[in-house]
Length: 337
Ligand SMILES: NC(=O)c1ccc[n+]([C@@H]2O[C@H](COP(=O)([O-])OP(=O)(O)OC[C@H]3O[C@@H](n4cnc5c(N)ncnc54)[C@H](O)[C@@H]3O)[C@@H](O)[C@H]2O)c1
Image (cartoon, rainbow, N blue to C red; front, side):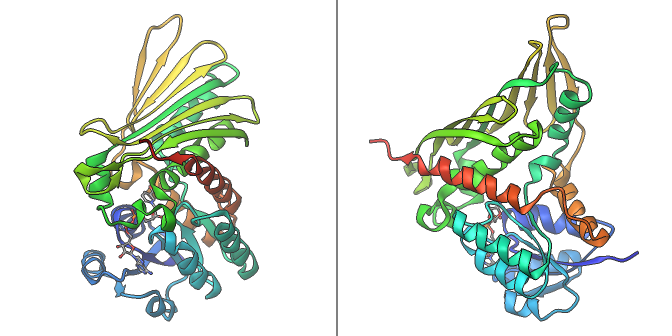
């Protein structure tokens, strides 16, 4: 079986904990190397997975065994690192947001097109088993009749969890450099709605605030509300927070059907259905590790698409639309007095 030679570049939160373990397990992927300028991380993962380690992209680019890269470096470096790999003729799975602004994003997309390499945005929510099940309930089982008329999405992440993921001096808190945490984190939910409804964004409005958390030495306790209408007529409200207390991390989605039924997806494992006839039916989604949020399945799709010579289901345009929406939401940041 032909295997695709892969290098995971950036071994922090998502590269180290989701992409590297996934690429190590995927049958038709050969995790040739890991790359991080942080020697401790590079050594840790190269030892764990028995692969080569590189401390710079320059070194990694010289390795002819590397055919594709998963780029999971901080967003401010996406453009420069992605351009290096694309220009060297490597396929790229690029973390989201694709760039820190629309200009950078379009530049990366154009470069991939002209180099004739695959560029796939890392929009993993599409592969998360809980959302795949919700889509099946809507599309195949018609649980919501003709479909959802309205959706309310809530993404609350507790401040202490975010501070552990991105310490106070991290790139993610620097709005000038990276667009800030609300920009970074809103892109997946926007794409989730487009994918669920198989429709495009028609209008999007947002308000957001941003306060420094003294408790966590300058991380941000952002709050953001976005409302959107999609071309299929569904309206949505999306609520984001990175400033809630311990144990209040929750990602939930309520979908109101044309037939009055309600589907509620709670975190990654529970789906409730309420109807006039049956008060509540609870479905459990059984999955673990990097499959929970769809990273493993997405990485596998990237690898097999390239090996089959097919365009992946997630297109650069999907990444651009989500990035544009994230820019719009984060633009509404204001500092409360
Ligand atoms: N898909 C998801 O679920 C998900 C979740 C979180 C973050 N992200 C995205 O992934 C990206 C990384 O986020 P993170 O939270 O993992 O960041 P992080 O800060 O935890 O890790 C980034 C790593 O990249 C390394 N790095 C920086 N520049 C490099 C370079 N030029 N070459 C090699 N290594 C380099 C750093 O040393 C660090 O180890 C961001 O774009 C973020 O928006 C995606």
